[in-house]
Length: 392
Ligand SMILES: Cc1ncc(COP(=O)(O)O)c(C=O)c1O
Image 1 (cartoon, rainbow, N blue to C red):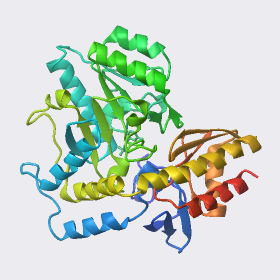
Image 2 (cartoon, helix red, strand yellow):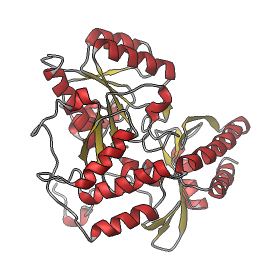
Image 3 (cartoon, helix red, strand yellow):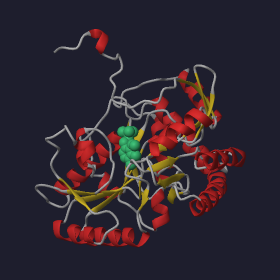
Image 4 (spheres, protein in one colour):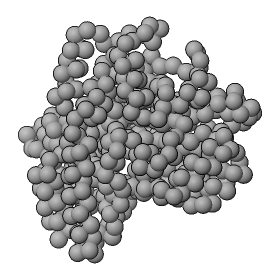
């Protein structure tokens, strides 16, 4: 039977939403429409790394709002160059493609890997190997790259050209050796998949193998990047240099922007017409990202994140010893997963309803904690007190 207008929500119900209307944010807090204040340790799912409405980004955006909102990529946009200079200076990459989201950044990575496969590796059907439990986005190519059936269910036929290898297991190295893919794409901490860090030794073996056989190593830094795991990019902690990295989330402090950055030998396979986006590199978006990144590399944000995350990790690890209902703490820096014995969602709901604390889940049994990198020690102390009460 056809649905009547009354049955249909004006906004498609693709999200399971918590019952609060968020109307304002500043620093580590958001407010609902009733004036209730929440400590936001979800940070827009690892996006508001500088907290809500950070002054430096607000100021830059205010100025840009009076100058230029949009201009086609048919012309040079100086702010794009300035941001690309920052990204390439502080990463191992040489050139940047701009888009508007994480999924689009991974789409761009998938396209450049396929083109590299055709143009450089002379492959007719370039293959990309990703990992089980990974998450790379919700568009058709990125959900096909995602190694989780629940994300793919109902959306077959998938985009061909992906195979999934076991994460953190040497069997994946054999598969890569056997299949000679054009690229391997991985998260160094699987975020949506349950906050699972990749083993350093395994990543280094993977990196060596990829370099030896000419397979591109593409690191999805969409959740781990922009200081989230303690360094500007998570790959720095693995002593590797990926051929491609993808960024979004924290890059624009909440203003939508995605980026795919590549080393020169990869970047040069994209030529005029290879890829594009009307809004990619929009003047407002690159302004927000430039102000964000400049602030992170020039201020003490990462030092603060290091200090506060050290405190959080110490306290949470002590709680694991004391509380049977918490099984383990894992992750890196300010990307923290708390494996719990019962349904994680119950803790998330209790935190919001009884303690005005926003946290989230990463799968059924993992509570995910994503404080802004700017959160203060006092806020972290308040957070730990709430967690102690939650697990009483
Ligand atoms: C690792 C990773 N890749 C890709 C994405 C997709 O990003 P977006 O939601 O901006 O499309 C996400 C989003 O959670 C992510 O965590």
